[in-house]
Length: 178
Image 1: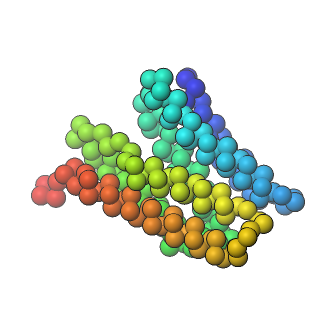
Image 2 (image 1 turned 30 degrees about the vertical axis):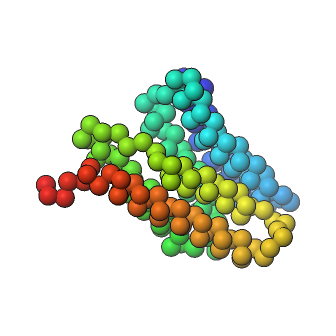
Image 3 (image 1 turned 90 degrees about the vertical axis):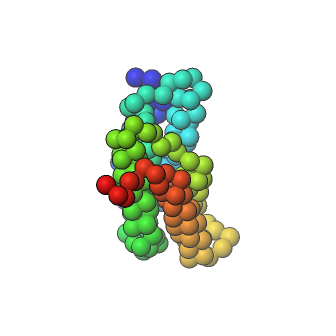
């Protein structure tokens, strides 16, 4: 198993660690959870960079990397949703986009085509991870509600935009007449 795939697996392993730290009741547990989230998020960028730079792209990595990313982000969003800090409608937007784009990619593969991650998808992932990191902070220069809503709006907007872009750019994949 190559290094990028090990980093992807590390990200998956860090998800339950994040959850345990999130739920434990000790001073600073949110910062401990944040540290794990940051490390896991960095593996998302690092594994892709290493895989492309050293030609270590594998089928396992193509499958598991985006899945690990979705699992990490949706886990954090679900935790914030349970606290009432991330609205359920925004979580549904994110989940719907992820399922829809994954479905589009499956149809494309069935037609012998690969849909690579677009720039808007990468921006969405980066913005989402940064926003979720900010939401972990307890000492803020602005009211918590203002930060939370700003993050929710940024996440929802970048998610919607990138989802629509995937379908517009790849509309030929879906043959509506068959």
